[in-house]
Image 1 (tube, rainbow, N blue to C red):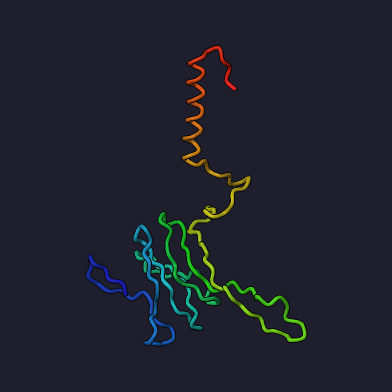
Image 2 (cartoon, rainbow, N blue to C red):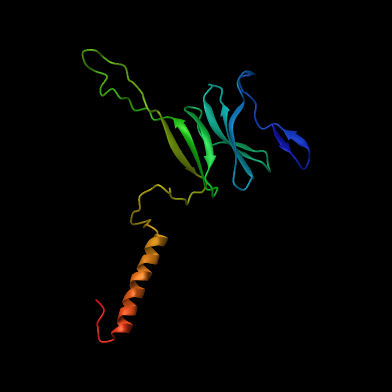
Length: 166
């Protein structure tokens, strides 16, 4: 339920699809930085949690993740452009090969990983290494130190006008 303080009304935003009153219908409710959106984890029919995006103004609820993997703990970036979440979908077995004399079963450890979901198509991950299409942005500290070095060179040139800068 969401409570509208101005209108003094409650609005149901989610309910347990399995009719299970013992488990919560939603988990990890988070407001967007502009307070226009909510994210939360909702149990799907298969009891996996999927992340939902809720528009407060329209009441439209949109799934952000699939119900084929367990996903939760969604949080917003401070600028509201990204949603970060944890998902149980890294299914790489630590057993090298299922063949051999003992025929071991696959063993999945470290299945949870952190994922970033951009909320606009033109966004580039802040963790992506720079490349020719996305060069690194100049660091503020580097810009200051560069100006300082050029200022020092200008001062030396003014002190001795016959000296050529290197």
